[in-house]
Amino acid sequence: MVGMPPDVAKKIREIGPNFNQDVLFATQDLYKRRVDLTPGPGVTVIKDMPYGADPRQKLDVYRAAGSNNPILVYVPGGGFVGGDKNADGVFYVNLGLDFARRGITTVIMNYRLAPQFKFPSGSEDVGAGIAWARENAATIGGDAQRIFAFGQSAGAAHLASYIFDKSIHGPRGPGLAGGILTSGPYRADAKKPMPPMVAYYGEDTSLWEARAPYTHVMDSKVPLFLGCSEFDPAFLAAPTFELAQAVTLRDGKSPDFAWSKGHNHVSTVMAFGTEDDELGSRVREFITRH
Image 1 (cartoon, helix red, strand yellow):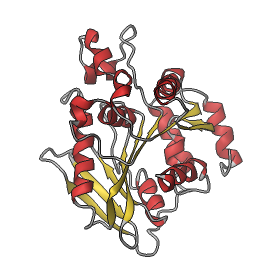
Image 2 (cartoon, one colour):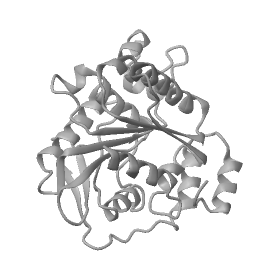
Image 3 (cartoon, helix red, strand yellow):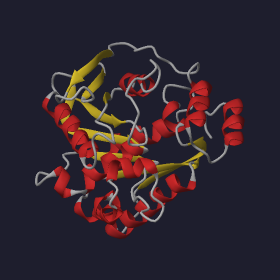
């Protein structure tokens, strides 16, 4: 728990391996006053850039100083039916500014939501957001050949489907230098259909296996960084270990993997821009190597 304040660690441990709206708000309260929201020298922010016609198809750009920087596209979570790139002025501004201050131009995107928009709309939007970053790389000070994408929770599921499923990313491939996937549901359990999964993947659970990112692991060789947290609920932690096993068997070696001790389902991404830089340093090192 490098950098995690003891009082935060204590409270997260008391919450335990649970996640709901109350846990989300409680974790936000733990971090919001600790976040550094200063842009830093040369960092500029451009909000609500459209990448499609739907009102949800907008993104925020946190441009790092200089030019030809790596680009990171961040896909927030939200249980397939919610979530926002900047709901409260803190999260996920914290993540965008933290990476931009460190020389990585960051794009944080919204996407269309279930139940109005079902599979594969979220992953199609991820692809459209990445395409926008590639087409506008020079304008936002980035390198079109070094685009990375980072998804958390449902955002990780959408990103994983885009990375793995060739019916979604198409014959040209995902066009990514690397993918960061943390605490995502990569294989919905059709035997225990949860309402958010039904809302996105549909009521016909016989289709879920074919729609699961896990099913398509063999269809992409994008370098991966996988992660989950000590206090992720079991149904959100187990899919990451399952995915890591599949990738290990595919590649003959383990992917980059971070198990975030002391963290819960959302504290890892809320910690960006605070003194707790453990996951951030690992992600930046992955980007530097690729």
